[in-house]
Image (cartoon, rainbow, N blue to C red):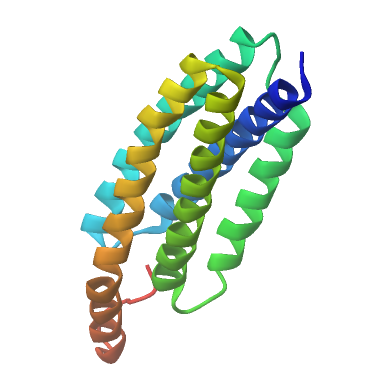
Length: 169
């Protein structure tokens, strides 16, 4: 295996771990969302996409003769748990969670953009095709979050201004 091919395999493992982290973060956030049904529904939809992405990435990794990295996957899940747990201690959890999700989606977009370019260089058309299939899902989620951050913020502030309702989640 050439150095560029090793890089593709390493980046696929990173992407798999990233999707494991995403699933863990989104699951934690969804469990605590009570008053933002539109956000909750979109995150639930994206979790299903994320699980499918994990399977596709695992297929690429195995096709290239590798295996997922237990250490990377476990580290990613641990980071996600820490991120989810930290949200429990802030009064604006829903807003900060949505902001974090937006940033994370953009990291995923960058990762798949790199993988597509690397797969082209190495002639790995199957990895390229799969990453080109995943990328629009991440772009759509990032755009959805960007478009809904203003209304989510307004909803949060309206709820926070009313002493009879809960705004945090």
